[in-house]
Length: 446
Image (cartoon, rainbow, N blue to C red):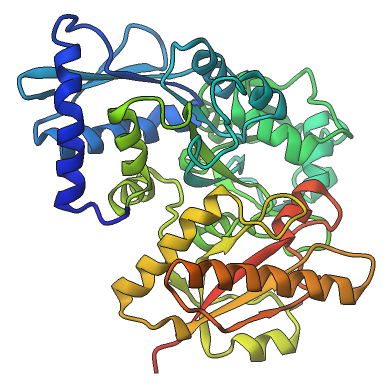
């Protein structure tokens, strides 16, 4: 599935041969359309489409403005017929409406599908199912300030007070005596939905003085020119602004890096999605989704500035608060840049985790490493007592070990670490989701 092999290309070519005939009678028709998130659609989706069409056809791929702001058409010739893909990037919520109406074949979203949206599409497809929900990249919601700003880190609660207007001068958070200017994404944006959920929550409301943007890049550029500015954007849009570290309650402040974002330990990490109507979008749409999950597609994700889901081994930079027992446990291991996550409150793997199983297997194959080199460490969010937390953490590690074994990889080394070493505020919805995890460690080369 992830090899990008010649057989993969032949399957695409066989499936698309008949499709090209359908578009011969209407050469201006779009082969398929992607609507939704500006975070996904501004750069990442066009790059993935370009790579996919180039691999499929072996011909150059052209890109042009579709006649509207934030809309692009990418096209290539296949067996003498045009293949055209429209990318319309007007915000995550617009993408759902387009998918529901049949205008879009793929919905690009920088937030997970909402319960109401799942219900609204239930008669057509289950948007929460593995066949409909496809994580294509991990993003860290970047908190941006002017390069001259001496402030280096802020807590989520402090960010909430800043963006609500309760804190209005940088001197109140250790900066200069300067009025704070607020920059925020617009209401159609999944980036805004994520920020509102993770930072503002139910306690705060965005100040009416905030400037609102459809474009991540434009927001970042304007912050970088304003010494009093602070804003938020996707990680790929840091550009000339300064990036702050963010802490969640008593957890350590982290900057978004390959490890902290890929593992989703960073407090403002988020998944970027493509949603389809199950497998009913047609052969070419299904093959494009498969391409985004492949090693070739994930290499494009990395080049785009987002975080690829392809695992890499990283030496852990332990925070001073990490217990000595954990140092001893992991002293002979490197950490893989993947965490296994679970459906809320369960030991059942979520959709991304099912694909991560194959990615860990592929990592072992490419590195020539046996499954016995893996160590799985489970964690739980805070429970009513330590024994319960320990049991949950061990069950989660066992669940991943069992899933790998069923997939053909006998990873038997696992343990639980209870409710210790939280990466988020215990009890909070997002913090609990991030604390309930299984980390993957790989033995150092001897």
